Amino acid sequence: GIQVEQSPPDLILQEGANSTLRCNFSDSVNNLQWFHQNPWGQLINLFYIPSGTKQNGRLSATTVATERYSLLYISSSQTTDSGVYFCAVGSNTNAGKSTFGDGTTLTVKP
Amino acid sequence: SQTIHQWPATLVQPVGSPLSLECTVEGTSNPNLYWYRQAAGRGLQLLFYSVGIGQISSEVPQNLSASRPQDRQFILSSKKLLLSDSGFYLCAWRGQLNTEAFFGQGTRLTVV
Image (cartoon, rainbow over the protein chains, first blue to last red):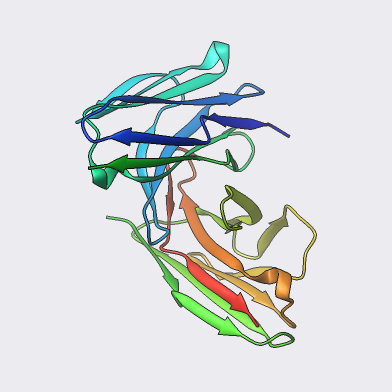
């Protein structure tokens, strides 16, 4: 099956810093999402981005499907950005099943 | 708007006891439904998915089973829990156009 690799596994930032999280995948996909898992475990949808670039406030994401990677940018980080960020990829022809990476754990210090 | 409900939020069960976790979706019809499990410090692993009533596909061999008795209801069950069944279980749905997936709040299961 498809392999998903996220980097870095852990990231510690000072409040106000910028960061880039990366998601590499091993096969063609037409379904890619970024999630933020909060301290209570809930998965918050950030972006549905199988290709192209999207922005939502301080967050933006870019997926280059032909090169099999996606990037999540966090600017002017805040302590509330702390948590685990997951990338999930899949094929829409396969019942919409998603394969998750192991996540990037972000800690933003005040 | 669509919403997904999952309960209970936490559960502590003895080894050998049965399990039933329920997930329901509102505001959509004929969704694709999924059960995932998350081990501590790891990503989510797909356990089961369903594309329609009574249609269940299993992704990994295990002590669990799933059922979909109604269009928007997905149930995760076990006849006898094992210690290794402990974890965080999440239900998700996606529309038939297979775009964005949405997750429930999860059930934290501890088998003792």
